[in-house]
Image (tube, rainbow, N blue to C red; front, side, top):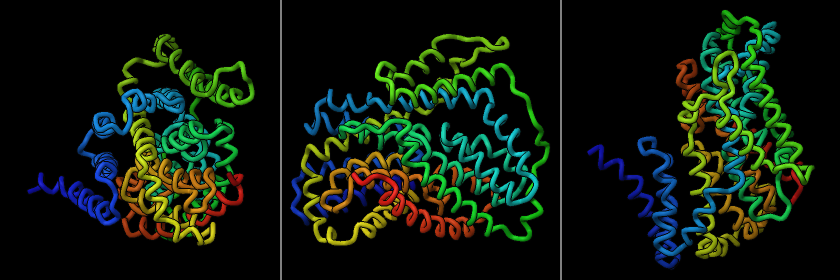
Length: 445
């Protein structure tokens, strides 16, 4: 019986897709394409299925059935931003391996222990900063045992929510950012570079930081106030291997920034690949220890890189097949609504969708979808795509919404009722903030 229930989501998906396709008289080839797309998304969300399996569906469906050529599908798996993100993953693993994050936390958190509000501010700030350069999942996992010492629900939430927010700050902070930038750079004449993304997102990250701090500070109850302290937190000195790691970190950042302005310098993707190759292939030894042992390569989640390619391949197929154009024709009725209402509705849709599904998978599908539908909706393209990408990373209600949410909930310090209540308030506040920011602070394009 349990084995049959595993197939129920796929039965429901195909029933809905086929029914809608027949009702709107859509050709069977396009119905099959849509059904395959939602099957891939559902498989991504299923933890029992290895993520690399659905990521190869484009080769199984799109090529044999004539939607795209093999070479066209293959090129999507080797996009420039894939190399940029790969370099970021190597850098993050190097930082984790040498515990640079722990040094950063322990040496800075002591300056915030004078009051509960300062401590809340410190945990939120540190989590946001660290997750700007390593994944929000890794940030939450690395800070979890340190925050658990306090037994404070609010500090635990600050750590998890800060990790999600910090992922917006840079292209390498989250896979969703890389997917959006890669898609835009393939389609647009004016490219988005590493420094451009920081310029776009900094106002939103700062506004989000204030929202999180205020909401979490208000939520602190009397019983929790006594828990605002850490045990055995001491200042620790940097070792040679950690100093080397920091030098490499700043070299990465330096290259990503100046590549925008110097034509003779390698672009961001090539710089990431060069730096990653040097780290991996040259066995530097610091204090008789290899700086980047080969065993660390086994710990990297390469499924994310495959997911990039799968999402972009399906997006190309949706456009080439004409399915996007059919959907656009059925959206003319809502084009008369105000710009603010339409974008707010899109943001809310993304936040709610990612409460129950992978944000990376959602962005891989919805970015190409909205890039084609923005005209029918009457929305500016760049602003819509940035709003969709941002919204996908900021779901706060359910433990399943993001990996940091799940990690925070696993501490058993937070009751589901509290997460739902705070998450609902944060979702509404962030939806309003994203809508305002995307329309007022990002250049309309």
